[in-house]
Amino acid sequence: MEASSVKHTVQLITHTSTGCPFCATFQDGEKIDENINHLLQEHGGQLLHVGTETSKNYEGETHHATLALIGFSVVPEKRLPKPGSIRFSQSGE
Ligand SMILES: [Zn+2]
Image (spheres, rainbow, N blue to C red):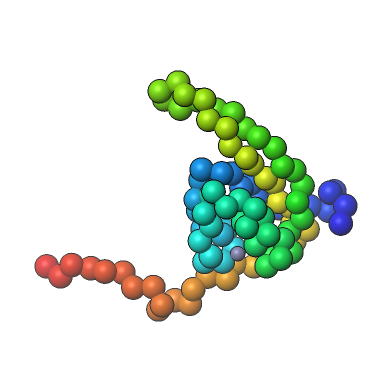
């Protein structure tokens, strides 16, 4: 796949745990390698770039993070849980 065919990119970064943007799979930010595998194998992504990012937190401490950019030639369809499987809890008044 040519990089020019990339239509959509997703950025992964350590220290940030989030859900997969395309399905309900939880992604632990510390396991960025597994998250990359997930996007490549489950959603047909292509690894575009891996790098490090250095930032400082509010206390002035330096943090190093690994980031990865995953590209897709087509935007994967979202596979969200079916409506009805999510229950909103409401406290009766
Ligand atoms: Zn997924």
